[in-house]
Image (tube, rainbow, N blue to C red; front, side):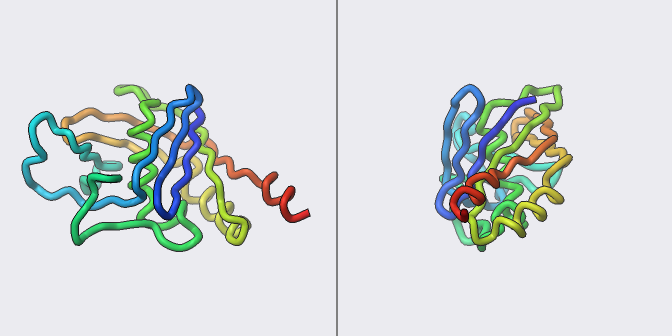
Length: 157
């Protein structure tokens, strides 16, 4: 089992792995259009669970841009693509194997009680099959979601 820390922020999605690999990209995605993405396929185009292909982060531009809004970002319908982008970018998965992930994420204090319950219902036990436009595939199972309540208890007491 691997641990991945993710923050789906209003501006950027940030991640850190157990091996201290860090990355960040703008918290946005857009459906991939059928067009030439350039020599070498520099723009990552992925899909989740055989759904619609999309582009995420700095490469996501245009009129059909999507971003998670509000305080419940992990439970926003537009968050799965960003979470998939973070898993893909992390490099923790291996093709042909299912990678068990403990996902750690922060939550704003104002929405902590509501989001912990809703995010756990949505994400714990969820399997994400992420596939690139080039056909590379990685399977992830979010075995556990950890949201640090100790910060809430420390600050509020």
